[in-house]
Image 1 (cartoon, rainbow, N blue to C red):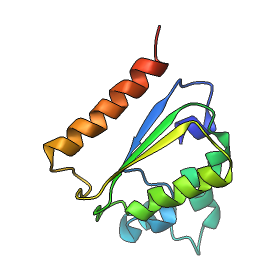
Image 2 (image 1 turned 90 degrees about the vertical axis):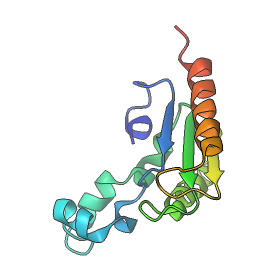
Image 3 (image 1 turned 180 degrees about the horizontal axis):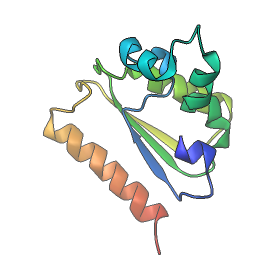
Image 4 (image 1 turned 180 degrees about the vertical axis):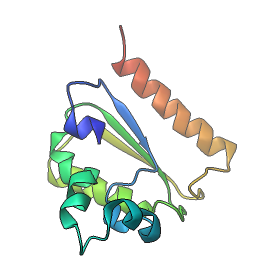
Length: 126
């Protein structure tokens, strides 16, 4: 969300298992904060990053496990599709086929953090 709404404030960012649209997240949890989409659709629109994807100007890494049972993988897929539709070029999507929300495989953790390190070393130079 920060890269979308304040693109000049950050040089790059990594979104790990991100909630991209609050309508698709844990309804009992979300409704305590935002009501429901039927009651307050504006609250959902204003707090969902996918609604502001056009603001992306800095490099973004999206990393998500395909077996995530907390933040659904399809949320990141929907954001990726939105970035494609907007013609954005400065983003990367890393999928982890065997991972739930909390990664379990050391190889997945290593890959994810190598990608984050490379992103930051490239774009956060002093």
